[in-house]
Image 1 (cartoon, rainbow, N blue to C red):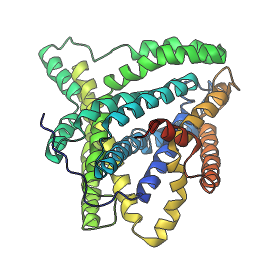
Image 2 (image 1 turned 135 degrees about the horizontal axis):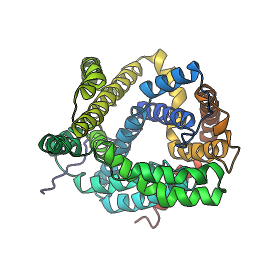
Image 3 (image 1 turned 90 degrees about the vertical axis):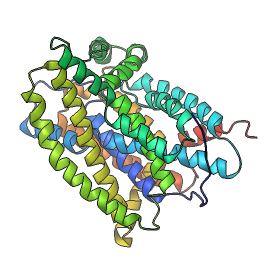
Image 4 (image 1 turned 30 degrees about the vertical axis):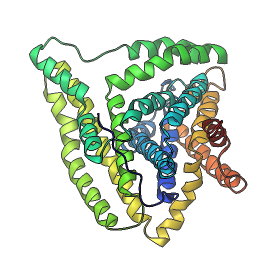
Length: 391
């Protein structure tokens, strides 16, 4: 590949709307994790109609969308860090690789409590994207487009058509998940941590491949880089018109994709093709909803009245690593067997209220902490370790 990179001519100042979006994303992720009981999926025997309505509503509104915003902003942060150093004549790539190694460490710590960690997956995907950071916008867009098409699912659709007996992609994530359950229900914290690391880590990667999440994460990282290069989150130029077009495009895309997702896979008799279509269409539907949220929030942020309200989430977004690991520790203590074991008593509605209360407490903590410190506690440790032996 030919690498040709020219640093931005304009400074990469702090993007407040990105902090707001990150805060929205991490808050939504916490709510999903709480109603899932931190990827435990153990609930009271009798769930109410309200519980089922809460589950369906939360998953429709948040699942796959908040994670996608978080992943896109990860790519944006990578661009900003790389470009800031390039403007000073320095190459950030080796230090970013070290930063991803550190993120793997945070992921292992997260796995100690929560078997559904995404930090380790992000670190691996970050290393995969690293060689692409200096490619041209056109080349990045082409690669991103290929990833958006869900190539694994496309291959399985073709293979399924050629061989109607072919089974849907199953790498064994479900079996690993089931093997973890006894330790989460009845084991000590050490037993739960052991299975979460030994079985949860590979499970997360296998599940990501089986369900299109791996290719989507890589796409979102590249999308974040392209958004950063285009400066679309800055209030400048004709970006408002661009976001309005994105908003309209997302409404149309969702209106088309949602009914197709709901009905077409069920009409296909071939199990492999049906499953791959369902995975692919679900990812595209969620992408339309996610970009609708991003575009709508970015446009609202241009209004001074809305900006003041939205900025309440900015401190929460600035401390996303601290908040993510915090929800793992607290959530595992609340729901797993080694802690309070509330998984057997709390339905989805109660779990959602607990999640909302926890997010509110985190928001107040973040506002207090950042009034006295530049970064969150874990963000500061990650920053210092990243720039250890700074030249």
